[in-house]
Length: 248
Ligand code: HEC
Image (cartoon, rainbow, N blue to C red):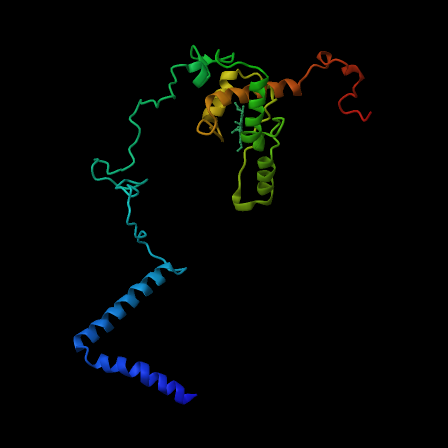
């Protein structure tokens, strides 16, 4: 067996090695160097692709297709302007398209410099508006003011607990009961303003709730106020119902 292997090596490798002797030395060295460089490139690629290797350089990206272009990102300085800011403040008095507030009734709840008492003409108070308002109220308001608006939302309960246990010096102003006389008597324009700009410790919701939805919420608040102070005489068959506070 070993003889056979020796035979094969002698027959096949010997002639090749003989030939190799005649190859000029610079070709041999050239081949060695080239092989090393090829291995280095391969190992660099392998290293770059292995997990956990971090580089703050972007990936090599041969076909650009306008993927990367010079630009300013938020908060980046820009020497072009005197104040050095890349983010330009709004030109004062400018109004974005679609944010025209010439219609003070719809956008501010103000008519003739007083709170509007009626819904704006473009807001149709119907079942669809109430449904929309109910959805928006449950999303944006009920967490503090509670589902029926008496000010018992989950945030209120949680904050109250933190105040009682003295966590991190929490302070909390209770959300208002929307059925309180002083609030029930407020004109719709004032409610609109409260949602838009906030009031005392309550922040405004203008950036989250578009004007039309604020009106929808107000229609739903009105419905809640009506429901919590309903006149039993207006409900058919109310006589047959148990009275409030009774066990029957
Ligand atoms: C993060 C809790 C929170 C949310 C959410 C919230 N409110 Fe309030 N709201 C309050 C608090 C607190 C007050 C009482 C503010 C005060 O007296 O300092 C208040 C007060 C009010 C008042 C009484 C204003 C007045 O004139 O006294 C109205 C009306 C009102 N909220 C409506 C809303 C509506 C509508 C929404 C939903 C769009 C809403 N709130 C969402 C916390 C909240």
